[in-house]
Image (cartoon, rainbow, N blue to C red; front, side):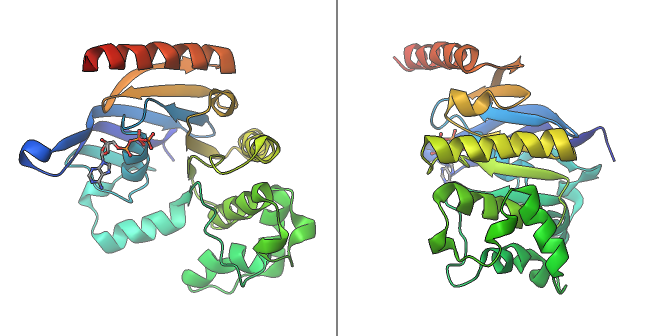
Length: 249
Ligand SMILES: Nc1ncnc2c1ncn2[C@@H]1O[C@H](COP(=O)(O)OP(=O)(O)OP(=O)(O)O)[C@@H](O)[C@H]1O
């Protein structure tokens, strides 16, 4: 395994063409070290979700390389990318996307079913225990709080033991308490299990749980911050936002 689980080299992605073309990413080079927790921040429309989608193999860049565990995705067929994504990458979204008619443990076991395996109750139970929900295995989503539902979604993303977990605004739909529980759990997964996590967020408090914050503006890297605090992240965001407002004037 590379020391850098995922590497992006000069990645560009443009949507549309002609006058309506939007350059969402413009030559981004960035690596995510194994066992690290990175937050991606930037003003609205700066390319954060596009970066995550390209890094996770959910979208293909127009230029540049995305290298996952030493494998360049550009050289793979759609089928091979799908398999690599299934085995090596976990993804969670702002909306939990749990199936309401299934229990927590059935939801968590789904990716194993999709991979043609029969989930073992102990295997699923261990991942639910990792996210602090061992006691809730038989509960349906409607009986869980928002924070608990997101933790089930994270357990589902982790059940295949992926090299990296991508999270796009994982606390965007949660109240303060639910957010804090989810963020503390993500931090714990990095510290205790060496899980690599890359998270997009708008919230400086959430970003402060990461080891490093990477900032984007207009599809380009705009610096990073190691050992962030909510205050240092908020100050950097305020200056990026005022720079991009004055550039737009
Ligand atoms: N499928 C698409 N088709 C056309 N334009 C797109 C598409 N996806 C993203 N874009 C554009 O690319 C740019 C970057 O979008 P992206 O969603 O990556 O930004 P973001 O930083 O995640 O924004 P936000 O914080 O508002 O979620 C934006 O101008 C957006 O409108």
